[in-house]
Amino acid sequence: MCGLAGSVNRVAPCDREVLTAMTRALRHRGPDDEGFYVNDTVGLGHRRLSIIDLSPGGHQPLSNEDGSIWITFNGEIYNFQALREELLARGHSFRGNSDTEVIVHLYEELGPNCVERLRGMFAFAIWDDRQRRLLLARDRVGKKPLLYATLSDGGLAFASEFQGMLAHPGVDRTVNRSTFGSYLTYGYIPSPETAFAGIRKLPPAHWLLWKEGRATIERYWQLDYTPKTTLSEPEACEALLTELREAVRLRMIADVPLGAFLSGGIDSSAVVALMSQLSDRPVKTFSIGFEEAAFNELDYARKVAIRFDTEHHELIVRPKALDILPTLARHYGEPYADSSAVPSYYVAQATRAHVTVALNGDGGDESFAGYERYLGTCLAETYHRLPASLRQGVVEPLSRLLPECGPTRGRVRQARRFLQVASTSLEERYQRWVTWINPALQAELLTEEARAELPGSDAYLDRLLRAHADLPPLDRVLCVDVNSYLPSDLLVKMDIATMANSLEARSPFLDHHVMEFAARLPVRLKLRGGQLKYLLKRAFRGLLPDANLFRRKQGFGVPVGEWFRAELKDFVRDLLLSSRARQRGLFRPQAVQRLLDRHQRREQDHTYPLWALLMLELWHVEMVD
Image (tube, rainbow, N blue to C red):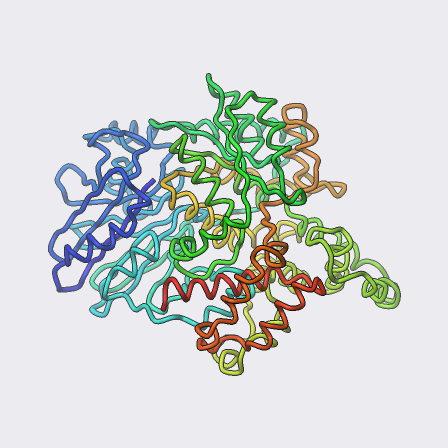
């Protein structure tokens, strides 16, 4: 796992000092080694976190035998050993034992299509001196980030993170305020745009080919939900265990110590269970919790740790943890509103004290239907079949009597949210369920100038849903999450939180073989009788404690709503109503004041909007001012 940076110019020689600055801005991603390749107009930089082949043979940038093809690579290729054997048989020679060298020779064989043979997580840049072209590529799901910018002469700069990109003086760092509408709606800025006008994200499952000032971008993979498997339920359980066990086995290959994040949920617990089966020594597990009982999962994590006799470590996160927010704002590089970035950072920090690699359960929800909005999707389809007179004349009027404020995860509050949108189209209700700040509240908060500057409606999720209208409703929303929430929120969080601490995170559920298997499962094996993750729970019945399998999904939430009413009351008020925040001209101070007052008096729960505003302001302070 590493950091990469570089640039290619049309005419001017590569500036070695600029390349060095870009690369060193990513030192946290690779503290073990540094390397550069400079050849006239081209420069590649690399920071290395040594995981496989700790010898100098793994040093990057790395080339083929005659030095005509060079690569800087971030990630892990789990099938590199099999690919290496194929390439040796075809006459290629290797100087070391790294997975990086396999990509170089595979590129010699297949060109950009080499990405289709790779099993793992990756972002890389290949300079082909023979053809004078640059290839940028990113893995299928988007586990590893890759940013790029077009330079004034038609050249291209690229890096793993914004800190690396902004070290290049030729990158336009004008704030792209038009993206703030998406941020306020979703809590993140969807690919390929960023908060900076001159910087773009290469989308997951895409490669970019640059030559003579012209860049071509192509998609090379799309998750397919058809045709559906005809396996019986017992056969599907066995096949799932086989696929997931192999994915875990491949991710346990390392030349450094490894462990696992353990939340106590089914996904991370399943990974720990399989690791324990595959390991000849106790698995090192790491969990994080809160003093607030509603957000604390440590008891469930302990049950799994005891079951598999792991070497278990725990950490409690308290309000003072938010002292890390300015650091996070710099690492994320653009506005990012998922508050679970805070405990993710701290569990990564605690884990790095013991291991260099940690497996996790990311991706299980999006493949096997773990979020309650998936159940809501299916219930709404049933609700639509009720007579309109009953829905509109009885149920919906009664739903308005349910309290609007209450515990964020309370059933009554969730019932109200469901009934408010149950009669609408799938597109409209899904949008409502995943929205951080709804359009009415945005209109209340934004100044007239900002409302004119920000797009009035963001239809990006609507477009994704309509693009897959031929799928069953559950598969449609799963597919949308795989293409939006997963890569733009969850995987960004995990990559930045871990790499800020020089820790590699590996995700067996995001193995594309596991995902392709899950996508083709019939809906009835994903959600049945109101039970989410039906097949996954059946497959691990008896292996994991029932308390972990069948409890309500909790998620990696943070009690910031309560912290905003107590220990952090003055902090959030002072920041959001500061003179500097007012001068930005984005939000009406009186409206922000009302939002704070309503929340702190417990009249309404505005945790999500307040957190989004807080992180937007912190981003301005750390990255713009």
